[in-house]
Length: 467
Ligand SMILES: [Cu+2]
Image (cartoon, rainbow, N blue to C red; front, top):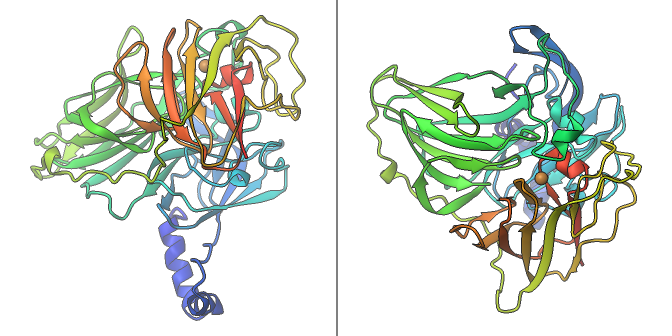
């Protein structure tokens, strides 16, 4: 059964629509492009083979009806074209879908109680939006997240730009760990003492739900390697052995100047697009490695096949910038955001899954999980105005801080030289102060939180309100 891709959907709807009234009415009155048939994403519990110990039970994922229930499908969208998905929930708990990094209307953002109601067992919810930006993004629930994401619900989104440069091949990597025991079954999702530090690491690492998978790619060809770190905890330091790898985009947005991949830190929630120039020799293998920690770990391998295409990364045209508004720094109001630890206190009841602890705070306020009684917004922003988040990390740990609904530009850091990257997630280092500028051009309440899920769920969550 082929995946129900957007391309297939478009083909199918073009055939059906040619004789239908929908197209002619839209044409006659010059209406906007009709919304496509929704791609059905059925949330379900299943089992999957992740280790040699046999099938792991209680895996959670989404499946296309009729398709296999493995890794969540890579969703393909096109920049500027309407997309629709229907979430149907067959889990025994509520869920939602958040589209990480997509700048879409607030009611599509997938945060329970803040932007939409729960999608209960047996219910469905229709998402429809037009992605304004091209690049690599991802999707996950925003509900009981340590369990639902930890047990499988993290998928990659590719938003194509028809004007993208031509590669000889594309490989998408969904990087994540699993907390499994020796019998291949889930163990406790976290340890409180680790949640109060780096977060609790998984025991089995995978790329696309396989350990150290190998993919064939044309010898001497240019490969677009799209990497999404969808793990709940792990920060990677990435390196490519055996092939030239050039960073072309980070977090969905083209880098201002391309550079060779060399131990780049990528945290949970972040994405990296590489142009990999495959070795000329047939059978040669290039290895993507994680150097963070004591021993380098292989993440995935690419093997050259066929006669060399003799391509040159210098021939690759630039990626188009995404249409993200530029902040007016002369008028921008500054917003102070201090990330700190907090004293462990009685956890507030949460209806969307609480971990039962408070370890972290934003501006001294811990907000434990996705409660139905959120504290006041961190700041109220005026639509269309420019702002600078002055983010300060006074903890001894690294935090990938993610803003929903809007992208910001990295202006400066107190500890290192930074590129003026446009992004939705900034990996803030211990004792670092960083300035992030953006235009508040999307109405609604938008979460600002750490993407180490244990940190998010034990206090490092807040939100801004755009009115
Ligand atoms: Cu954190």
